[in-house]
Image (cartoon, rainbow, N blue to C red; front, side):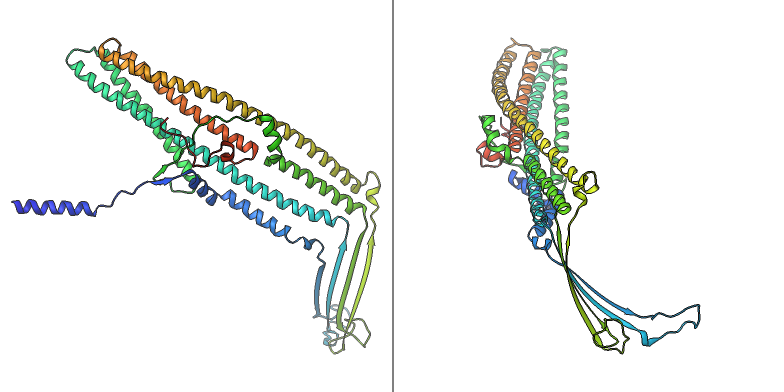
Length: 457
């Protein structure tokens, strides 16, 4: 009997040894999350392709003045012959001919320099778009990361509330069974536990949905088990909005983009004006070869048995446009339209600058008011904690009703939620201000560590 027990125990131990160990969750910092998102973003990949194309063109501006070449070869497989008329179809192989032509043309106009500048400007615009897309994605990842950290802290508080409510209900059950507690108080205790369970399940469901969206943003499998790590100390940021506008407004991507739009339209206007109102000088040369009836004859005038002859020719042409100088012509209207587009672009630039200044002033003001609200929220949490402690002592001593304790615990939970949400709002405002100034958020906050909210607040 003892031997049988020994073998059963040995088999059980061996079975436990063969069970796969539970994998540890992947610890994911903010920097790693940002890098994952940048590496898998389809939008970033598309921007990089467009950037590479623009860079290729900008590094080969000589193509704007590169001459055009043409090469043509022909063979007359059916010499000219009647088909339905007399003397009828006759295939005369003696009249077969071939021809070779090589041409070169170069056109020069004062607008070439503006065309080169336009290509360089297109590259700078693509580079700006690429960098802005990366920064916008980084800010989105940070905000999602902070939101998940906040939701984790919220769930932790709810779990503590549920545990405390359950312990209270279990202790009250004994008193109710012994007739020392009214049925109403016992029912209120059960209702508190059920409410805490419901709120906890709802919060967990919302967190799981946000987590799946975050994992999709990082290109990770929805079933990945991750643990978010990292904190940012919530510190007061004091900046003069007018000084920020003076230093960083010209660096905003939308302002730079508007400037580039004005430059592009000015270059387009220059190209349209110079192309329509300045002379164009064209150099061309052509070489032709083929059979000739005799030396010195034109190529292609002989048959296959004729000797090979060639000719080369060249020309210089000066084309002076006139239509654009006449009011009302299509070319003149195109120049006027180009001028109008530049004027509208300048107005758009002025409008964007005004909106950007208003946005920066508003964000700085909201940061100040939000910080004041955070200080009040921290005070509310401190008072609520002391109130709960006092209510627990009073409830145990019989000087406070159970409903009073429940109300104070709910006040503490609401105060904690308000503080967490306020800290998240403050962080989001900082990120929005960094984006509005086209600054790195670390430089704005003076921090150099991974980001996140402190879940132990």
